[in-house]
Length: 168
Image 1: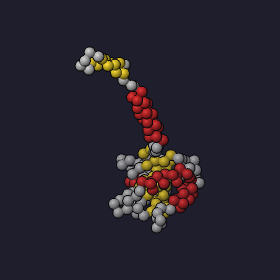
Image 2: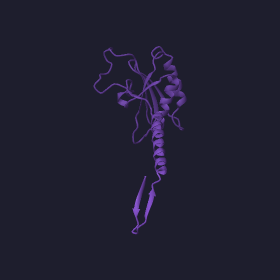
Image 3: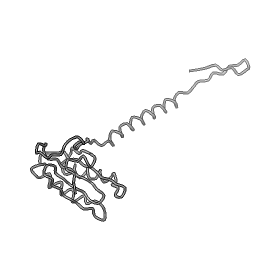
Image 4: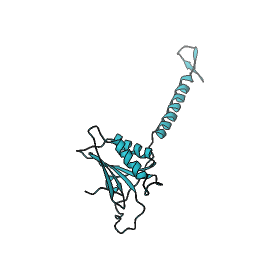
């Protein structure tokens, strides 16, 4: 690409535009966008919203689905509940934080029971308040423990939508 520019006198100057830096910048930007798009896909968490909706009645008449396992993170403890049988296990929070080893043992015990030996789904919720905030990392750690035990279909829901919510 050449252009002839007049300088005021009778001589003309030929100017060639160097496109190599422009092409280099475009190729670098294209590479950056492709890599960034791949990182976004890798960092994604695949979770499904689960739990009962607000319009679904409680299981009072015995015509409910199979039991579901629910985990509720609260500011002071962790609740593990089984729907339909209203069986709740409370794991108190230690001074150093949540007891993930006890959660793992409790989930292993539930996984070995007849209710959940062939199931892979679990629902997890976190009830964070101003007085007792729950860190996002705690919710992720609970999901990791559930996946480690064998509940690979992890669903996130709000606390009141859990199939087994501890009503004290």
